[in-house]
Length: 251
Image (cartoon, rainbow, N blue to C red):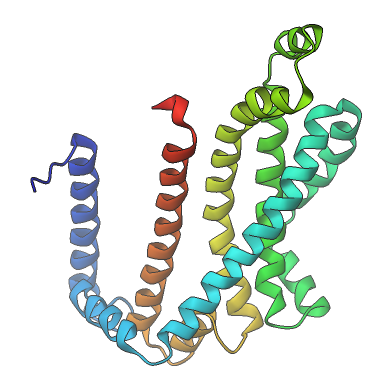
């Protein structure tokens, strides 16, 4: 089977090579594994982490927290976003809440959550709170993007409400939901790991990163960071794959 690459993929691959070269040059210049280990040493550490007995528990628990926070924020965001899109009054009411949540520093939310919740619940709460505004805002924008004349014409011809929802509103908001989900997952993973670093649950990537920092295992710290990036990238690709499968009219 022939494998072909696009121009963008070649450019992306070249960018990765450049980053690795910069990393290697800096590592040679600093000449200290306690400051910046060499890329190949970090790669060996990544492989060792994959074979470590506690890897599945740490990475799996972080992923589970991310999925849980995403599901909760998704359900709340869609419900509130639909109401905000339909009702201008409710949109005016909820907007200050969304702006406040987005504006409050994540570290402040985590410090408050450490007082309110157990260490295991803190990352989930932070994930939900950081993802919710993105999903809610995008769903609301999607609802408002529907041409009012189109819905008015549908009601004039007595089109059933179910068909209006399934053939007008849902196709309009799905691209917005995908975009909101992508943005939410991107910032959500960072918030989860920051929450784990500070709350120190028994299992979690953030916990392992904090342990590595405590014992000056810089290669392990960078290795766990790379694993977190790979997880985030994997979910980003899954969302985009879902977009191509669901939004068939864009193909």
